[in-house]
Image: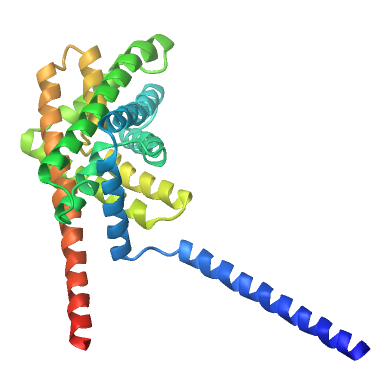
Length: 302
């Protein structure tokens, strides 16, 4: 009788040990899976699904979210202006530009992690369902228009409030706003266009890499890496740059409204080309080809 009890106890212990081991194994597998980059096909599928969700949203919701995005990304300009005011004349030119570049990502972190709409993400994301045949081009143009208008209006409000409050508070000088604006305006049209293409390309890659990452710390690192590159290189971003130039227009007689329109036109066109051609079309074509090869291989087996 005692032997039976002992045998039963041993079996229960063995079963419990097996259960614990299987749970630990499952936890390790889940952890490893969460910390591994996703396959390209999986990223593409998720990006298309995310974009389709945006297309299904009500226009009012999209407009409000993009307005919020325009406000939030303005904190990049606020921080850059603050750092310029604090350290201009006290740091070397190279050191100051480096500091401003790493202030640049703050607004993008707020927008992307806060899930607000940003036009330069949708230059890639919103194109994928069009390439997939799920959405018409006219709907794409409507979505782009809503998000761009919302971002710009939000940026105008932020620029207006900042140029009024910050100088009175003594945290940002008028010279700082003028410097940030002139940095965007010192090039001719084709240089501005080319710079904006690179910025749109990087923002498209940011959207793609964010889908690949599965944890917040990794996403923040990617956001900082990509957007600091845009800031350090002085590339033309149609939303952050819009706030910089519009704020300069509000405070400096050197910057005219035609200067602002010049910047906005070429920066927007360049961002669209960069995100659409160099990320959406290239990625979709590459992954579509892989899928086609897989389908041919499966048919050959049949």
